[in-house]
Figure 1: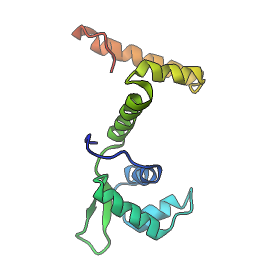
Figure 2 (figure 1 turned 90 degrees about the vertical axis):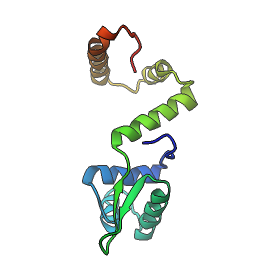
Figure 3 (figure 1 turned 45 degrees about the horizontal axis):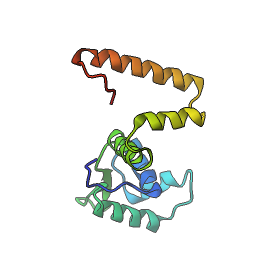
Length: 136
């Protein structure tokens, strides 16, 4: 996700999650999937996809009668962008403050904590040879 790309709203993120899960889709296909968890009208999904196209969150293939929409960025890119934005706005750019919030609020289960701990250890092993102690 490019820096000039706006942060998706909650509804836009729901649509992006559909596109990431199933790939390029028509408005009707997106609406049908969204309706499994929330009642969403066809025109609402269409309007959101039109807005998302203008924002460059998605792109539209107009070669067929039914327009097909696809994400303009990967789920991982979007998650990274959202976390970076949250870090800057709410935690002064400090991943440590964010991690402390997770731990203080008991948001991590013991299993999740151990998984995160193991991932940090692996990351440190991979980056151990470059002399940089910073984990990004």
